[in-house]
Length: 254
Ligand SMILES: [Fe+2]
Ligand SMILES: [Fe+2]
Image (cartoon, rainbow, N blue to C red; front, side, top):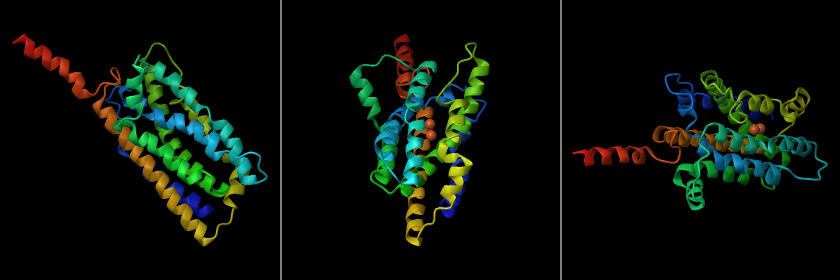
């Protein structure tokens, strides 16, 4: 398993270099705008809670690896509640018609956000505990990169606002919880590293790690595209729509 973990570590370095993270660290942009993709993360985060409950978790079990996974799922199945709080705090909890909300959640703009959940499900449902662990480790690693950056943005946000709000999803608290998962404890780590894989399993898990990083990479591209075309103050209106009233006003002024 050491080889698989080493591959994840190597992929993590490349993942951290993605344009989204560069954008999120650009201090010339308003920190709130750097989180303008927040509505798009919702389909993934809401589904991730359910993946923990219905795909990763399997009870009862006598398998020591599945036992570690089960504990992990209880630590990780409710972080969507933190996201809902943060969406409110970011001021984007606007009233939308139910059908418009559905259209947004199943729109092209949130396509990858939904697909990540399907991909993770594909590799974990009824899979062996080791395979599930590989998927969880890869997914959590991308999450670690994301939260390391988002928690810095949140710090900037807090320093510029008078309310001093805690952001429980995007903030440092989430990063601490996620790096402190049971499966990350030194004892669990030693156990996981000592798992012996056949050549065939190793090749298979390498491919799965590739796939997991690939889809999360696409997700960062989707977020970046959204932040570039949407203003966080009008989160569900595209830039083209935002410019429209201005054009109309100019035309009627002639
Ligand atoms: Fe989390
Ligand atoms: Fe987590």
